[in-house]
Image (cartoon, rainbow, N blue to C red; front, side, top):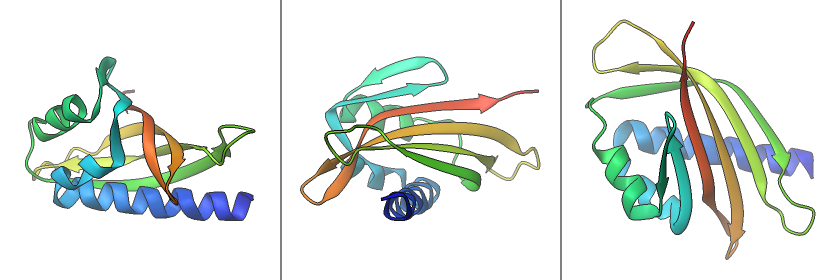
Length: 125
């Protein structure tokens, strides 16, 4: 289970950050009306609110670099997965590298996964 779970987590994060960095609107398919995002402490409920926040971010270009990726089972009754990512991001043409952490709770649906919960924080210090 752990090799498969780690492969799913890696495939998901590769897709998520590549899509985020190239066309954020493509992330809409990953969220549902009951999905929740906490963005820097601000809670957002539902795909429309989440996508509005992601589309309104005050930068045009971003590049994510995943440094660590951890995955764990999130349920004993379904193949849900918790994914914790730490990394770096570079926004616009700035030279200031920002550290971040992000947690995804992935739930199975029709042979794929969607994001039930998503917590994003910049790491200062």
